[in-house]
View 1: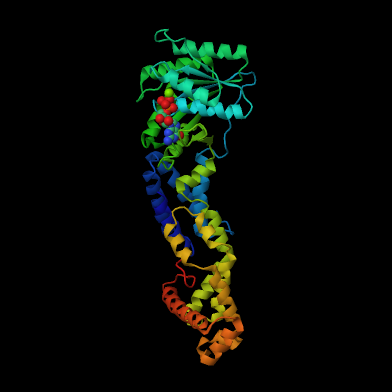
View 2 (view 1 turned 180 degrees about the vertical axis):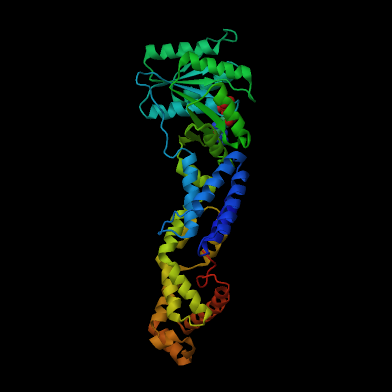
Length: 440
Ligand code: GDP
Ligand code: MG
């Protein structure tokens, strides 16, 4: 997903004003990228229509260039669908707070019960887990294991008691929690491999019997296009107050998050990122938006680059290249602007998937900027304006003045000439650039 979008935004970034065809091209890429990320088609259609409309409207932010504006619109819309603000767990006014988990088999419910217990306990709560999955022989034991890991008690039916009734177990557990003053009850329920009427009824019955404060629908983020159907089925069959997205440590880009949030209108409350009990965190819509777009801190990156390398300036420089009036003074100024960006390598490090760029930057040596400064500052204004004046004796004088060798001076002039030549070519194509580097 990311590479293609990054590419699209990069193409936009080098352009001036945003035209309708730019917007259409970008929207087409966004559509394709979201579909690649397994966002459902209906959601994608709706999303891209909104982005297109906004990008073509008069909504203009003077502080941003057109590319930044599209990035911002896409980002804002994603965050909006994902719920905007972070949604916290609702606790009951009169404890115990009852949290019921529902979802397909293998979604990560039992694991989540342990994670929630540990997290709640750390937060000063006294949680109790309830084994209301009596479908699989191992389910109770599995919950007991995570309960032990989290250091919280597990309410389970007496062993050897036959198949047992999960609705009764859940109900009894809530009563016991009241008596023993546990303030949160987490009910683990059975799942099936697919959507199943009997299973839905059981979950729905548990819900009716325990009147939970939260019903969390747990879903594997890797489920892809099935996410929408599964979420809809659970919404109709059981209904839920929030969503927990699991296995976000895998390859899933989070397309499921967008589909589910959009189709059910329910907030995503937690994200699960691994098998361990600590691999778990409250869900942040803004972070997920970045993950879906894989923008990393691309906005920050653009802002920083923008400050250090003003676009007007770039255009003037491009003109100078084109007309052959680029001087060593300009060269120095460019170098200094690069230095102003602070540690460029660190900055690029914020950009996911920028491997190639990072390689180019590894070759960029900030020490070289300092040496270039020293040499050019040892030149006379006339020499800086016209490097052709620099004969052997002048080069020797400059080397001595700057504490460098004549070879250093020669190399600098050579680089300057190469850069001028290269940039002249590039400038004819209308793309401003920075000497000695590829486009940022
Ligand atoms: P349940 O059937 O819904 O109760 O699912 P389980 O809690 O038994 O989890 C099914 C499998 O997924 C187990 O092997 C878990 O260790 C694993 N699992 C659960 N959550 C995550 C997660 O966030 N990331 C990864 N990688 N694995 C997970
Ligand atoms: Mg389970």
